Length: 138
Image 1 (tube, rainbow, N blue to C red):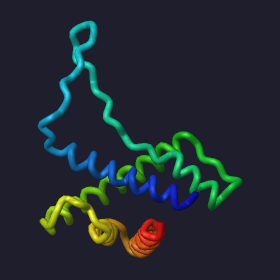
Image 2 (cartoon, rainbow, N blue to C red; image 1 turned 90 degrees about the horizontal axis):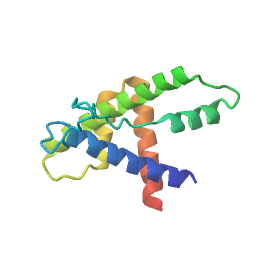
Image 3 (cartoon, helix red, strand yellow; image 1 turned 180 degrees about the horizontal axis):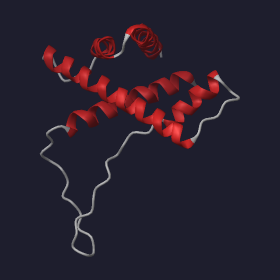
Image 4 (cartoon, rainbow, N blue to C red; image 1 turned 180 degrees about the vertical axis):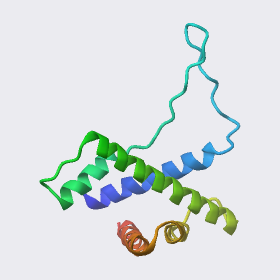
């Protein structure tokens, strides 16, 4: 079960990175919908949701502790912001290398080292290496 979860998280990360990279400067934006009164409707942007994963990690570490809806929203915003920063940095590293369009492991490692501070950086890189070795093993 954990390897399936890591695979789906990896796919979700790739989908999210592709979404972020196509958002900036996209010329093929869909036409805005017009409501009954002739006013334009605001399109809702698809914001990624990590609430399920945050709750799973909380219950693994502290099974008796809960989290309020407001706190979960704050945690989700924190994770989304961090993913935005990591995705943008990985995209920058990919563009600088100029060797292709495929995001590789070292792009993510480099982004993690540049974005996260101190101890989080070390844990992030080690967890990423562990996840990739489990992914390759399957």
